[in-house]
Length: 72
Image (cartoon, rainbow, N blue to C red; front, side, top):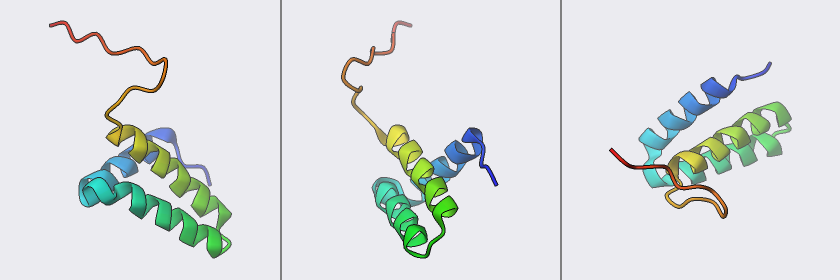
């Protein structure tokens, strides 16, 4: 079963709202749990959610990333 990108982002937003600054830890721990249980598909989904949470909570631009134009 494939989870769509919009669904991953929606789930990441929920995780971020529920767990705040701990959201990354929660997602990483769940991915590890599923991996250790042998659920590779589930672990892969949670890794995608982890990446989305990291992007949602990122405050600095990546190296070489253009800053958004903030003119009103």
